[in-house]
Length: 173
Image 1 (cartoon, one colour):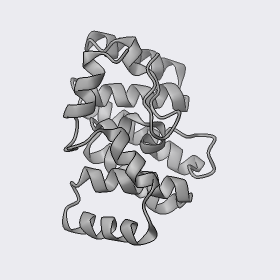
Image 2: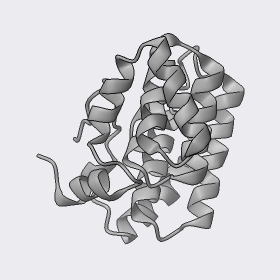
Image 3: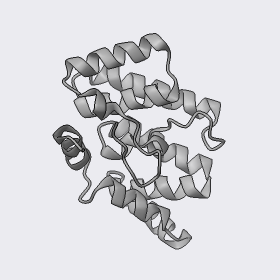
Image 4: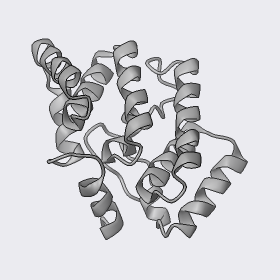
């Protein structure tokens, strides 16, 4: 069952008018022309998280490493609290995936850890960073520190379940 914490994070984080599942699902269905239009939209308004989320899903499915990773890095740097960043393929937490090379994975990890230093009281961002580390295999001491602080922030452990085992679903333990 989805808790109020997760529901609030899904609906309040970032500037999404629709659920992150809907945004990402739409991205999986984009045509090349629609992806180009979304890129143009982002040039005019980089804060359009719906367009960015659609492109993350689109490039992930197309296995286009460079544009995918650039959008993921931007999301981590600018909106670590976004519900989109709770999905493994939108957070950079795919260490075994050829799309996410070692250098990109390390950069995503470093960006997430920097976000925890810059925003230690942001529960949504902290939860996303913790999910990343739990799935991506950060050092044990880092994982323990993140989990401890997540508990201090009142984030239930069930909310730290990795999102995005399937591109259009959030799975909660």
